[in-house]
Image (cartoon, rainbow, N blue to C red; front, side, top):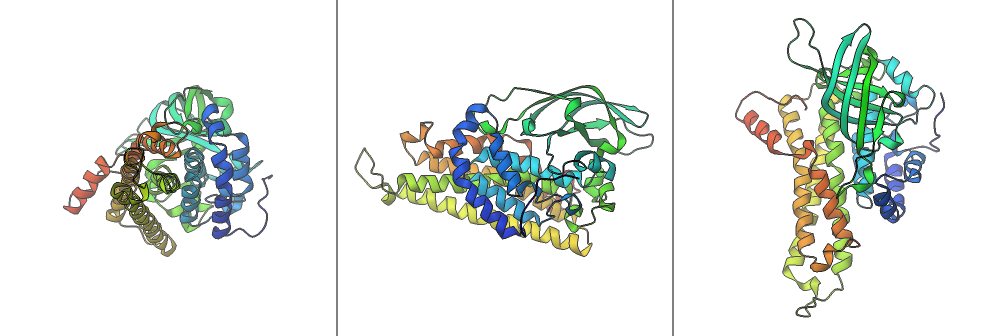
Length: 398
């Protein structure tokens, strides 16, 4: 097995320090990433060299098997400099965690020769599936596969034909190698421009049974990979890890927007009346609200994963009621950050609409993040409220 080496004793604090050190470099590359509509190859190499893609990867494959909070701390730090980089890290880096849930044979196919290989995804269950001997035939087109140009495999969502006597749909993730799909360049967007979230097209390819992962196994925290990757990290509910990978980056976007706003406004004088912006009530309140929102969202994120990990480490099941609440907490992150960044944007004056203004860049990127299905709080909120009233949970993506 070959792997990109990660030198020295790796700790969570060291990874956080490496992420902070990358911020100036990543910020300088934002124009390049936006123009190319994908991350520069050097950015992927920098993340690999820092060991950042290995945070959630199993130790048996050269990974670090760390507490999820380390992963999300690194993601939010990078998002304060380049939201596109943080987005790709979130949705690609979390795939090392999910691959650990697949049967060992699938893990070997991906990582046996090179454990630094990356996987992109598009989980929407839009694929057409036919059951055949030993596996399935898969076809379809999937959108929004972020970072796909840098990956050699992809996770794709689809419903399998239900087995005889089965209860409910059998939604699965299908693991497909690069040779069996093509990437179509469709990513012309207003925000998160550098994520390269292009379309994946599959034309009637065979996917063996061992290269599928059932959503019900992720929900029950009893996946085939748990036999070879027994660490508590891999007994967390699939839905809790995934939704946070697309919401937590917004915390870093708000952090970056606030820093840019304060830097821009600190010595500025309003052209209309000559008042110092730092003395303006609107500017002061927008800044205070942004900082308070950051504090709240970080505390909830840390509390939730600490609680989840305590249950996983003790072998206790996380109550469905808590999973429902945590899912709703995640769905609220991006809308809360949108509100705070919108206030900063509004308080920035007319100059904020120019493309070179960093507040405007965070404004565009956080609105793009809000468009993700998992970042819509309506259904999770209704479900959470219903559960409080004693009604049954209706969301199995928790």
